[in-house]
Each structure stands twice: as structure tokens, then as C-alpha cells.
Length: 229
Image 1 (cartoon, rainbow, N blue to C red):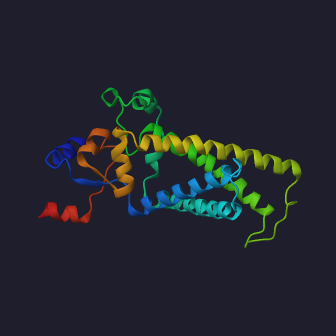
Image 2: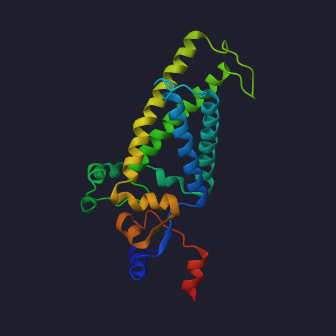
Image 3: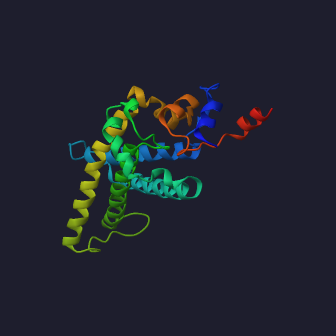
């Protein structure tokens, strides 16, 4: 079906809901968000002099975050179109226009995700891998249900690298989380925030911000049945 056909079929029902995020995606997103906030708070509040039993909370939140990342990866590869996160060179021509919110000046309509959303996702992926790998290594220095602490598991020099990489990635999460929250509250991005809560965007929003040829939304069975009737 061409984009013209899609637009013609939607013009009469601009407020009809179209699924952007499934329930599984939304639940995992908020689980991941909660674990990230716990990790950030338990990392930096003790440094600011706020004392509490943070170690157990931190590594448990880290395991939840790791499980969330694993689920996201498997779910995206099996149940979603992983190519929606693929970055095309021609998308960079619209980088500054999308940052300024000048949608009328865009030359390349996006698929499911905008370029900045893709770049943000890939950056989070890199920093997530770093904190997960280094975090698991650091667990060898504390007692846990999985093993007894072994501070000599790595050499002193190697531990130094582990701490540096873990700390750098953790620091990177702070501005990225703040950036994510900032854009979530911008008025022109409100439909994306709503879609992560309720799961849908309207047809009008779909056509206004996305190219139907690049992002095809499968209608729910109920919608198809109603249209057939």
C-alpha cells in the first residue's frame, strides 16, 4: 500500500489510535527507567554525604537493569523491526532542523524513530554495555548470593581500569537521563511521551511526523474487523 493510499484512508479518521509501543515494550521501558534512577541515586548520593545502605540496592538494581536490557534486545530482534533503529546518512541533513523543532523544513521524513532518537539509543547502548560488564566485575569485590567476595580476582591495575570505565559510563547517564526527561516534557514531543504510557499515537500524528512507507503500522484485529463490517 502506498503512502497516498494510507493518507487517503486516514484523512477521515485523524484521531484513530495506532499502536506505537506494545504493553511489553512499555512495561520494560519503565522498569528500565526505574532501575536507572535507582542506580544513579545509589551511586552519587553517598558521594554527596547522604549515608544509607546503598550497596545491596545498587547491585540489585544493576541486575534488574541488565535483565531489562537482555529482554529489550531479544524482544527487538524477535518481535520488532530492528531496522527501525538503522541510521541512514541522508538523515543527517535534517539533524539541526529536528533539533529546532522546524518540522516544516525537514527534507527526510523519518520512519518510526527520528535520527536523534536513534543516536540517543545507540549511545545509551554503548554506555549500558560498559556499566553492565564493569558492574558484574565489581560484584566480585562484595559478598553476594552468587559467590563469595574475591578482591584479588583482578590485578590492582585492571581494577583501576574497571573503576574508571564504570565511573565514566555512570557519569554519562546523568546528562542523558536529564536530556530524555527534558524532551519528554516538550509540547511538540508530548505524543511520544503519551505513546510510552498508553501505547498509541493518532493517525493525524502518524502522518504529520512519520513516513508511512518507512514505518508501517499493523492495525489491530478489532480495527480490521470493524472496517470490514
